[in-house]
Image 1 (cartoon, rainbow, N blue to C red):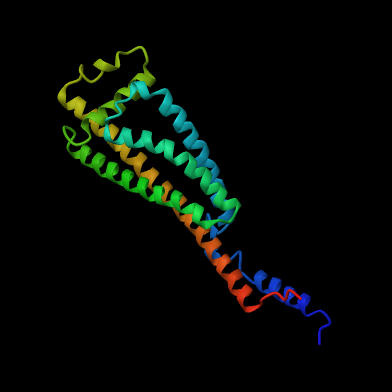
Image 2 (image 1 turned 180 degrees about the vertical axis):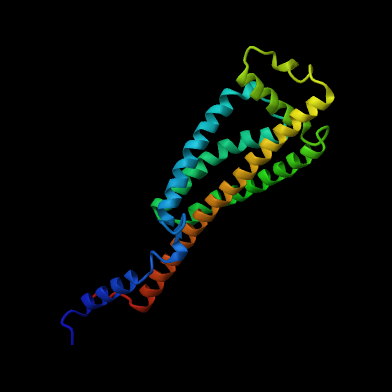
Length: 221
């Protein structure tokens, strides 16, 4: 008989907890080369920086934006919401609190849906340049034109073009925006997948440890 049953129980509990497969394929990402916890940390840091910059840009350009434009309004409001959610995600990862990660995943799904709607509208704009996202596409054309050629009057860029040339410019910009939003959807899904795997990893690990604590209770004597 063991001289110290309490020590034996503790060693058995530690051994059982260490039996959890931390590096199982389910908990790896990026071609199975990075653990999901590290991947989620990188994503959390990137998103925190991006949302901080977005807040700064939203404050700086509020006077120049039409807040009542549907998508611009959503982007402005969400930029102020997502920064604390990105910080909460990092807290959840470092503290291994999976519940703290749920708000980030919910907003990620929301953004993927918004991007999908815009993607569909810009695809329709390619085929019907005189409707759907016509006005918003023209805003992007003017913004790019003014950035590349600040000496031009952006308000007259499209006015000096014929109907066919104008529609051609709108189709080209709509095509570029389709590529942009397609990329955003893929990136958003990729981020969501990594964060969800990290969330599942913490949940599985906690259940594993709790199960062992019930099966092998520590002797307090």
